[in-house]
Amino acid sequence: MTRPPIVLSIAGSDSGGAAGLQADLKTWTALGVYGMSAVTVVTAQNSVRVERAHFLPPDLVAAQIDAVLSDYGAAAIKTGFLGRVDLIEAVAERLAFWRERLSPRPFILVDPVLVNHRGEPMFPPEVAAAVRERLFPPADLVTPNRHEAALLAGRPLPVLEDGEELARFLASLGAARVLLKGLERGEEKVDALWDGGDLTLLGQPAIDTENLHGSGDTLSAAICAFAAKGLPLLDAIRQAQSYTHAAIGRGAGWRLGAGHGPLGHAQD
Picture 1 (cartoon, rainbow, N blue to C red):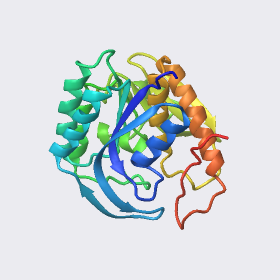
Picture 2 (cartoon, rainbow, N blue to C red):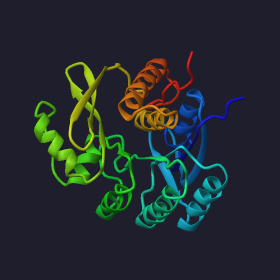
Picture 3 (cartoon, rainbow, N blue to C red):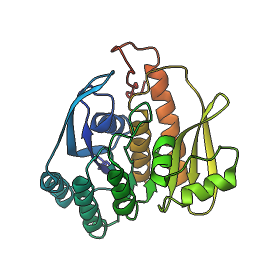
């Protein structure tokens, strides 16, 4: 049997099963890659709210990363919910270490989880600064949503129609490549890819549903899966968009809780 590509998520656990590590692992199972995890935060949450969050010690997070990468290796690594400067620094240090020791070098995606579902900052400003300063340099792709991008840049997001200004805005974040998620254009949802020079707009028809909890995690996890399979970045993003759009559609009519529901990750 062919060995599946191996991928690692360094992120928080969602007890409701919709986002975070749970969304990553469901996505990776559906897409045929082998998913591993390094847990950063354990949350008590559901479709309505986060009740509590317990941050794991940085040395334990680092030990999880070292344990799996020293044995399994990884073709792609994703970071998600970190939330504290000491955790960000520990993860950045281990990424820098393993990035140069794994062969071939793994694809690294940073999903800067900084705001809640209403677009409000969840952490003090030094957390966003640490994400930008410590995690962006080793990343092959950074995937903020529009609220996170504005927070990271310290200024409002330009309108989608002003492509040149949007490209300059994304360049100002200081990452090699940025995929800005969740812009709107009429009845479309648009992700904007800046690759260090060109800006590419990638649209999908919007689906009328409140069941979008974990959609950003799912998209970034799917990009990792397709990158781990060897697809060029733009192709990996297009395939990930298609998978995520279908997963939103499968869960659009569900009523699993009182708030924002999950996606349907399992493919028909």
